[in-house]
Length: 105
Image (cartoon, rainbow, N blue to C red; front, side):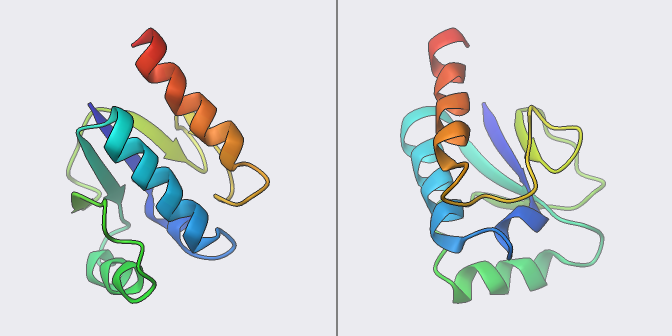
């Protein structure tokens, strides 16, 4: 199963360390692949940003909008988890939500 994260959630106001923690936990304990869904023409920009900030380690692939993959989605809208940022105040909620995938999936 894939964890698909909307690209805008890896940049501020999200906290890079929390974004990395979510991808680390997801990759080690639950998901086969961690995918980042990018807007048209932004894959290389997001990849360079993630790499510069040390948050790329557990990312398997950067997806174009035309590439459709199934999985558990974290997004600002229309995701399994809808949030506006990945930060200290909601990381427990995110981790517990993806833990539920393993317990009930």
